[in-house]
Image (cartoon, rainbow, N blue to C red; front, side):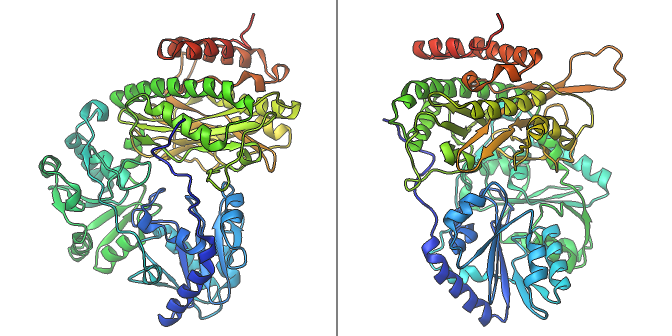
Length: 611
């Protein structure tokens, strides 16, 4: 009926091979005189999604999630994952070979202090750890009486005999009508920032920042349209862009040569060393930059200026063209999602749909727009207990039928040239229980609280996060993930520096796009999440206000399942918000969908409308 083009349902975990691979790695470490090794899920660019050749953690442990780290010692090994992945790790990892630890509650540094023997040498690849991350590990090793030892080449690569080749995705220009600002203008703005920071050069190690800066996109990483590349920006003179030449067509090469010196990736380390030899003051972000870069510059006599990435906040604040593109992408995507929701509501109660069926259908509706370039992350589609796994990824092995009486959670997004989308809806299949309706309504109240927030300029995400949790807290409930993340403009669906979470210390500025996605997950039963994307905008005028005020404009357009709402738990203001949102959804999407979907849309968006 439908077919997925941008995602696979194969079971990627190689759990059965992990014991043998662990033994091979230990033998290689012994040969090198190392007593252990740390294996993060990372590449040289610290990407969230990494190319297959950098999936070392998955190769070793079987864990296929997007965040985690393993530590291998001679006598024991452990893998660390956060609350999103605890269930997945238990399913994918050989618990005899690897103890499964919570990344936050019992982090690698604490585990090392407890388990590393005095005098032991723990190896690590400085390209796969940030400056700050390596410092934490070194401190933990020292506290245990051991030492952290940098390796020039990764010992896993010596054991991984069928390792994939590095990607060679073609680079394309990101059209100015979508970018909204010429690359030359962006470079001038960054140079102005460098002068304020008294830096003689800036290392750009994040491919998202490189692609934003030069108005290019690529296909080296799944679901995130980036080209893997580094850049060096001097305070004056031409920048250098380090990118594999085979990725560049003649036209792209010509355009980029107008902006920068094009250098081969192999030149990067030599040029870093030259900066050090010239005793340059080089700015880098210790929370994001690979430690190897700092080691090369400082090791050759350069001065490291530590500080946050000056590109990240500029990239996060979308310009007028990017905001217009986001609105257009959300409208298009909302129509596709609503077609899916209407289809699902017809088909699911019959009991024949599986999780994979739903994923394939949703992707198909998005492809029908004719403008979908990719999905923005692998679709999360969990029925019943699977919905309680925050980052569940259905495989042919785990796939199950969607049964009446269950909840179905679907979290998905699209990559379009004019914008990146991310939306979650929780759907009732048949009649939901009173417990389900109560939990859903508490989550919805938190979602509405964020959507309606009015806050002074300079407010951080951490200051708003409680608004989303307050109603769950009163019931003794919570959720183990952030309330919202930044979203890029045809870039990563997860973009810093701003986020709505307990750890969100960056100020929310007008023009930023973030998610609003509180949830609740009852292990073994169901999961609930309601997610829209929001734009930080100027708030409506407030009489007597003594400082500038901001608010959120909801960008996402798709119905929220009113059958899951317990009306008596909502205030009049909350019911009015939902009615206004559904009226807006109905007005915007009705001209864009087919007749059966229009009828369904009209019905579902008027269920709780005030009389």
